[in-house]
Image (cartoon, rainbow, N blue to C red; front, top):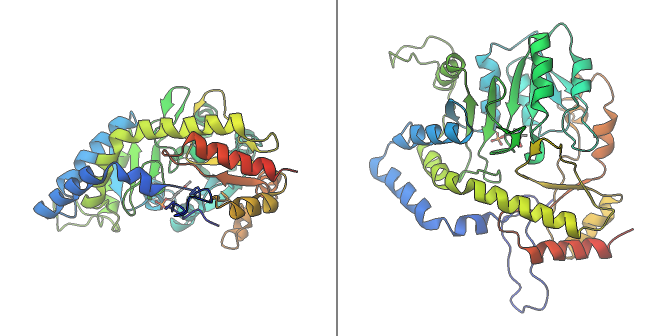
Length: 382
Ligand SMILES: *Cc1c(COP(=O)(O)O)cnc(C)c1O
């Protein structure tokens, strides 16, 4: 798999078309080098590498961006999810509904707090959690639903909210792939009890290393999470530890970089959407992009298509120097680490896992590159 490729080398002879990287992080940062250098240099100057002023400044700006009240920076997106669960008191004896088509981190967070993931199938067009399947999986021990906004598209939050309130469950958003996405006009981060974001470098808003955040409108929950993430430290006595916490903080250097990148996030998301619109026009008919719910406004973290013969398609892309990925080749309930939690086959996700393929997508992707990918696919067609 080539989904860690970040660099698009140019052929020196100009004879062979240049490779198309799966993700062009180099291009994304090229225009931001000066402001990023200045921001990091300021942190080097004041030396407050932990809890420096850039952390609170970014937290405020990101909460506002998400149209929510509070944000706590944490070390990564997985910790964000785990801290939300811990802050809600979810643990041993509790079950949490998790769509099986997600990055394993969603399920990991559930297991880390001692709760049990209950895997749920997805819808065949969007590959997001199926609200009816979620309803059918609710039992006496169900405590929460993980609403995973995969590939940049939000799940149907009104449907899941109705389910959560009917059964008294916490609705938690995994927004690691959905910075800025909307559903029915509402942004990711403000529609559930809390949302976990990742700033892994390849995400729509990426740090220059690991980072994450919890966004929420619940001040009491946010206070508990802030405390848990800082060794359970008392808010009023720095040497008083009231609960057993841990260490999960957003570094000042990463907060400074994220604050430089946040103002251009919407523009980058629009560029991703334009590239996906271009793919939709130029891809051969057998390359079927994942569907978009009529109320969703995705931010296109990934350009996922379903193809009949993935191995052949991937070979053609490799031969042409075009990056690709699979998100995800093995649904969580079939991963060895999580198989013990599988209670039933999840046929939609299992079938889709054989056919999904993620095409190159970056805010810098040009129409020419999209056309070239489409031509290569066309010539590899069935
Ligand atoms: C990236 C990701 C995470 C985990 O984020 P990290 O910052 O890598 O820990 C969780 N859920 C989903 C859906 C992700 O894509």
